[in-house]
Image (cartoon, rainbow, N blue to C red):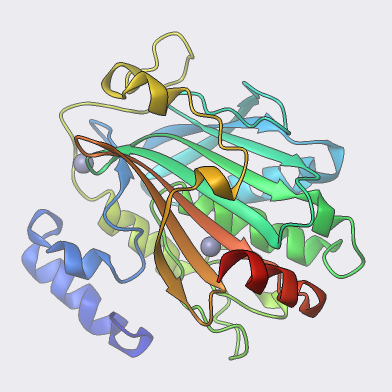
Length: 279
Ligand SMILES: [Zn+2]
Ligand SMILES: [Zn+2]
């Protein structure tokens, strides 16, 4: 993994060899595999379906305008295609949802549906069971988790996964104190440029539900799967820091996968439960 201190070097390397020739190992810096939305040009518009309730509306609009500062993508909030509780995916866009999903240990979950390296649809779920508690019912926690989970749906990974070190100043950094980690930083925007520095010959992004172009490429069971909980996340493929960061993969064969990224609550009360369920 490329460390923070090497970022200057990485930028030089990227500039020197050109984006198309960059090996996937470099993308592993803070990209999520090399998953990305297929599109034929930049800047592209990615719709965020609004299935969130009033308490999240301001947060969603902050996240949308934060990420739209990117040079390669613009996010647009559109009417949701599902309900907060079901959070069924819609081809060609991200559905953003909230509900009290239960005392299951997780604050937020981002899932991407991928065919090969191309993301075809994605969902973000924010767990009000925790956001309705005094610990997490703050603007800072809501901003961090919304910003991070939506960031994952672009193909971004974390910059840092240690909860206890100094904040990096990005929502893609794990922390116990979200105060200065509520928004993306310049490195996130650079990483988006490196992920989206090439054009594809097809597109998986859609502005309308009817024309959703990625849908026909997915096995129907995958396209229509509603992910209700951990039982449907699939196989644990990555775990770090004692299980705080976990990535799951559900493989439908032929390069078709659903990948789910989980942000666990740091609340100590939940520690025992979480350990019992997931380790
Ligand atoms: Zn591509
Ligand atoms: Zn995350």
